[in-house]
Length: 94
Length: 332
Image (cartoon, rainbow over all chains, first blue to last red; front, side):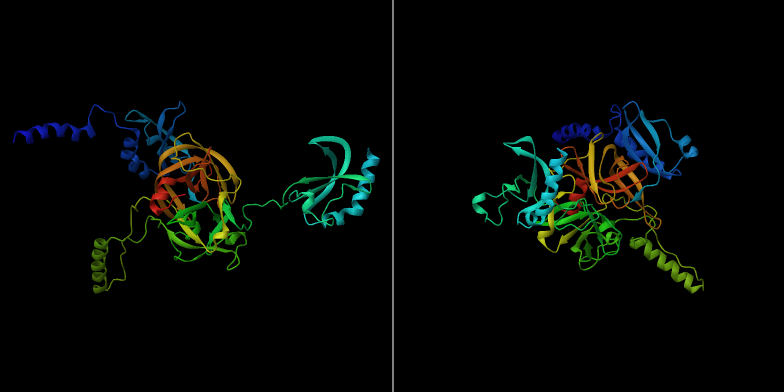
């Protein structure tokens, strides 16, 4: 009985490691979490991970054309990561 | 000097046919005589040959005389001279980077030759080799593609063997539960005499990873493992942010770029208003146009990193080669 209790005590923290509040989420996680919301906005054609003008990792949102309304509703940062909006045009199979 | 040139010109005019008729000669001209690898200031008649053959193995007929009408000759090896080929031409054997297509499409690019179960096959996009899911396995693949004059059966190079279906948004759903519910609904409509019928469509199609297909050649002699204007492939590499890349394609030929985004999810338009969502893509700057689809994308060291399939005015979208290889069960 006691070893079950010991094992539980040892294993539980391992299971909890995944969402340790002390660890900031990775940019991949943040992008994945917010991607669906971006695609609901008018004109969003892509969401990826690239670099901002200062060379920091950033979430890049691509638009089919200039869209002031969509651009104004996209935050400048998400959980500490910069968000950059780029007008890239409609993406077509070539 | 000018007198010399004119005199040799008239000598060459007299003897040109006779020189070109020799088995090995591919060109004649006037140039400076080379002696022991160094250029001299003496003009001579230069005969270009496919390959230099020791005098002992030539008959006196085939031998190029050391002088013609007292003008010295020189023999240089140039190999066979061919008209410069463009990617939309017919190639046999066919390398990567040239025009290819299913009989029912315009034209795309033959990416490269890969291996499945020990057999070499052509790798390109589904929308190039399988007409965006519309093709049947065994359909004819033409090189060059139909838009570039490829026709059946003369240019039939391979048969479609496998494609990864593209999941489009708004397609009829494959969900059995939803379809069952709706058929009950439609029965109800029929009972009450309404002409309305409902159909289940996908709101959110599954994300696609690749736009890829393979085709088996009819004749192994038609395989050229290299990529036109690039050369042999030196292994594979996983695409990373900032990586310098290049491709050789049917429309824009050899171009270079840089991976600007990874982990890209993108909405891609196919022909008549069909949209497919692709995830885990690589994004580069503008380096392709319509017809370049299917191009192999390589890094600086000629290592294969992706399969080009879409783009906008300012971007190029590329499938990761590791996804292409694992979904189709292929390797280099």
